[in-house]
Image (cartoon, rainbow, N blue to C red; front, top):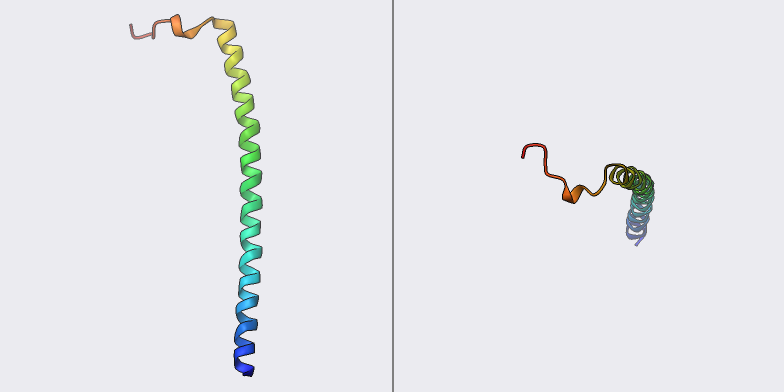
Length: 65
């Protein structure tokens, strides 16, 4: 009986550590996603400014034509 309790305690400790590790990974990925959202917003602003300064790019022929 005592070995079963010890085995369960070992498994619980392992699971607690695994959860803590996964939590760290999820938090890190969340930070990366937040940073990419900010960067995407900056790219959208820069692209809209570029389009506004050059006109509508849909009417423009590509340079190789």
